[in-house]
Image (cartoon, rainbow, N blue to C red; front, side, top):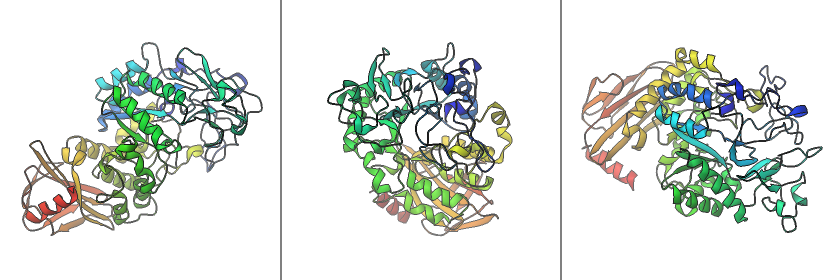
Amino acid sequence: MVTDRFVNGDPGNDHLDQGGAHRTFDLPLPPCDGVSGNIGYLGGDFRGLLDNAGYIRDLGFTAVWLTPIVDNPDQAFTGGDPVTCDGFLTDRGKTGYHGYWGVNFYRLDEHLPSPGLDFAALNRGLKARGLKTVLDVVGNHGSPAFTMPEAQPQFGQVFDAQGRLVADHQNLPPQRLDPAGNPLHRFYNTAPDLAQLGDFAADNPEVMDYLVGAYLHWIGQGVDALRIDTIRHQPLPFWKAFADRVRARHPGMYMFGEAFDYEAANIAPFTLPENGGISVLDFPMKQAMAEVFGRPRAGFERLAPALHLEGGPYANPYELATFYDNHDMPRLDADDAGFIDAHNWLFTARGIPVVYYGSEVGFMRGRAEHGGNRNYFGQERIDAAAAHPIHRNLRRIARLRGESPALQRGLQFNLRLAGDEAAFYRVYQKDGVHQTALVLLNKGDAPRTIVLDEYVQRGRWRDAFDGGVVRVRDRVAVEVPAHGVRVLFHDRPLTEPALRRRLKELMR
């Protein structure tokens, strides 16, 4: 979630008067196709999240990925390019409501905490409600740093834990920085990268020390995993060093990065042990899902190449973070049935599912950043969500995944991905636990009977939703509702020779 856009639980931290002539609260944009975005703070905070943690957990989720929590500038940015409906990295007039413009990586943004509810207390509260914390971290850049008509306080500056200035872009274009002659320029590269952001120098050990120190500070307050922003904008050795230093203090910490690229070969190197063993958001699968479950309505076969179950470039495709949209791209453009179909796939196929706030009710579907993608959700929508068909079906499949080791961690063996039908096994056999899930999906507008006559495990299966017994002999024939899912469980070791041989091949 974009924390500022979820729920305003404490109006006392809204800072309505912040920024003076460049105020920061509630800055609506002109409408884009009739819907206005907003580039100011809107009040969402830790209190709004914690008050609704039960809502998130009841949906079936086990963790919350928060946008960055660090201190951002106290004014709206006056440089950059004008905001447009389809613009990307156009930042004139924007504020740091999203958290990605850090100026002090050791200090909380003042819009988030409340008396008695700092970050550590939030994490304790989330854990008490059954939720882990995934913290969004930035290692590539600070705040917008140049092109301002006049230099603004904090923009392009970095402060340490004691509030001392350690870096300053001084409103200079990168080519005019002098890292050798000016110590305040040493944090930055001398070539531009993303928009007007102050681009951190990967080869400066001071930068690494600063970032690792800051994020270890927050991890120590109860963080369970890290999402790494703009990971492909720093070199692989940088992330290897970062991951090693974090895991030296927190062994086994799961991290996943945003490498915004739809080619698996381009994002897979981050996942390799020699490069830090950092998983990634599954952008190739995201692209396929948008085509299959969005308006194009492509067949399930479009998803097959993105799975990379055999011989793929990833260290482990099962650790990828799978998703169909987020805050940096248009939301999924689909009807209610498309969202339901997308969730049925997302929560049964390989990978770790991620859902963007509001998608449980199809909020702002199809909208890009400045046209409503990041709009305020609010308590009224949460209170009404349970009656929405997308919410109802998401809760059903997400909670089933939470109860099933096979759906969470099982080997995936595709039987059919074609047209409106998908059929595959998820097989988990470890430490005395045996569970095979047969997943049957129908994204068509009418019920259909899915028939399978190859790699069939005879015996008693149970319906995952109603517990009824399904007896399987030489073939499977199961009716699946329109835009529906059926899951059958087999809770014994598999015995069919052909099936076992194929599973061994997949394991290799």
